[in-house]
Length: 252
Ligand SMILES: [Zn+2]
Image (cartoon, rainbow, N blue to C red):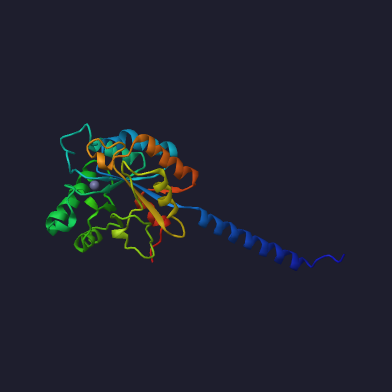
């Protein structure tokens, strides 16, 4: 048999390498689901139970801090600023959920701005970086709030909803959640929310306390919560904080 021309051999190897790389890359993109975990309302169980468990799984997350409800007086059920600082030091993101947890649509601009600024100042006072992501109290958005957040340099803000965040379609300052952990939520619903991620879309999951003693209507049991985390692990999801969207979700 006539030996192959060396040029033909190297050309074949080059083509094979290119197709392998493209094939693997395509597969990787298709398989990797991006999931953002968010925890609202500064609930104490987020520091005592949620954060250590997330560490065990190697997952990122954002904790949306408000001084609303009984935050300033009830330190049994709400985190201290020291605990919030520890979350930051453990690598989690501290996000802004406003001082008083009021619906932004009903707030005069000066009041809303002051409520946002208060959390920024508290972060600064406790050695926590100024938040760059936001969560709307009671899922209520307003064009004025979006403008304020934009002016203050916020990059992402989570509203309510039940669908994936599509960085190509959705405004990053009113992005939707895919799942909202409630006592009646099921593992099947969580799996369906995870399945919404992919093809450039991101599933943003909302939780409150695990458990949430003071707000039982948004509570998740520790058992069910760990079952959710196992799903994320089994599905090979990349579980990140909201601020990390810069790396994984490129808006148009
Ligand atoms: Zn809230």
